[in-house]
Length: 252
Length: 252
DNA sequence: ATTACCAACTGGTCTGACCAGTTTTTAAAT
DNA sequence: ATTTAAAAACTGGTCAGACCAGTTGGTAAT
Image 1 (tube, rainbow over the protein chains, first blue to last red):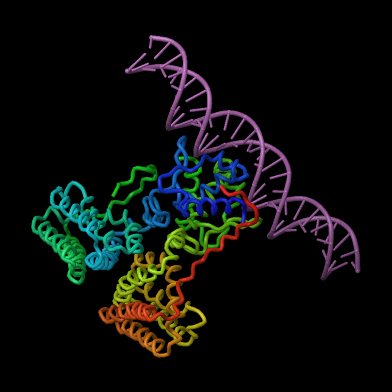
Image 2: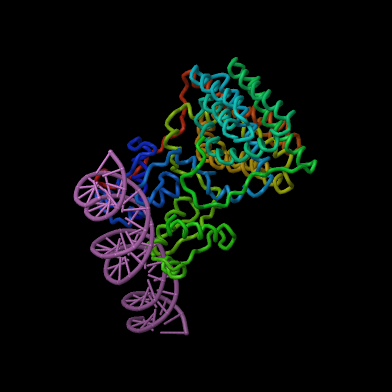
């Protein structure tokens, strides 16, 4: 293994072992080179590797920073290859919904079991926002609500999985919201479904919560399938082909 | 965005767009630098980034090669950060099993629905191997069986999710196999559960397949919980911490 | 106090040299 | 002629120092 690899590994260790927290600034390349006794080129190569792994973000003139998101979460991120590979296919949305059905069902189940007072408070806040906001304008409240549930599940792996799907999910939710919400009846149904999930979790009824969550996702999928088969104008998941932005990701 | 990033992206495009197949050799750094009109340093940085993303592998004196695994498959590999973050906590195994329950249940469900002849053939092969191999020696047949199921689900996102959990799962499966299999009764139960899953999928019974898969994972989790509560010797998920810190390197 | 500017950071790129493995070619020894 | 060993021509790995290009903060002129 080359020196560069070793350096990359040592830096990653440093970051992960709590020495450096997210968003924290990493010493400058010249400093690192000096301190570690290697040339700046090596440092740059190591940093690029970490960059590839999503551990750090680098900005010209500013410096390098520990990525705000958990490193391994980067998988399906903005300009990740997967996104480009998948996002184009309409089937992807349904594939995603299939996975969401399970993951969110489980999340709701666990949330009903394990939610603390804080979780319940956050969930309530998210739910209120969901009720008050115009659903057409943006999908964030919707996604925020679902995320609050996941976090209340207290299963780090579950959280991680769904964080990895964050961007795809945003698009997915966006697509479904845009398609489904305008139809008054559907909008109403979805509202009711959200409330069912919310109340089941608050009431501490795991089985009901799971069923409500699964029904919800399934309803969305089925509805869109129906719409599509009727030849309606279906707004698909937008295909992102921009590689320019690095920091302007939606904050959810 | 810097030149290096652009180069990295262009190279990845080349690879993904079928220009370069797995295990194929990439032009030498000097050639690339020449052809793309940039310095060798830039090329090296770009290659390191791709290396970090698992798209290529590089060998001193030989060259760089497209990674045998498809790029999109890369993620929580061997010593991925998440591993180190989580693997230490025993609860992680149960968290993982909770997620597996859902994901594998869904995979079995879809596999029963969608499996092609090829899938069925692969599945059969994996199942035979599972039956014939001594389960104590290694957990790979077990994991291979589960993986065959997932691939038969024909849901790329599901495949991706579970591939990402592969290594953790290997440890998880390893732990459960090591703990559960020696007890004859349990070993027998698990065998039977595997057969149930297998047969349900082959028979094209989605609901049964899901139930069988969920029951299986749940059985494993419950059994281990029981064992643990009885104070039995439980082999946990091994925590790997070989850092091979070479000698007196100055700490940062 | 505000503005403009400049110096001192930061990362980004280039060059050309040299070290260290690997492969191929060449030339010597049999 | 075949085998074998040395050497040349690859490959990536590292280093040095220079210069370009954004960002930031302080200072001097207004």
